[in-house]
Image 1 (cartoon, helix red, strand yellow):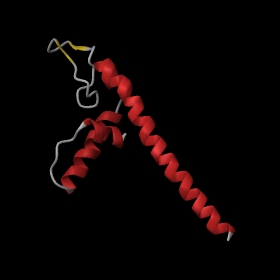
Image 2: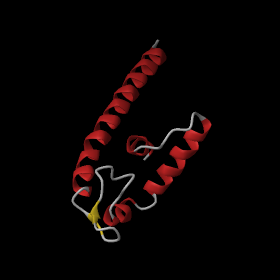
Image 3: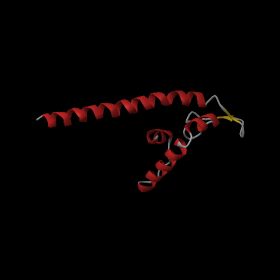
Image 4: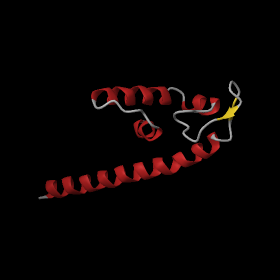
Length: 96
């Protein structure tokens, strides 16, 4: 009986943790989106888009290190197994 209770409690805790992680990640994503649009691209003289994972400024690319390219690679690999779809920023964010 105690084992069953432990399994149920663990399942509920992991479910809540998963939801919290998604909500937190999406909330934290808003600030880099806003900041990235204020950063000019020196090679094109245009400002970066709000989708900082697809069009990151040099500083965000340095901060994120290999995380952005690795997330892109995983997302592309996952789309080749299913229907071919373009990789969007939310897919990359979920993969980080």
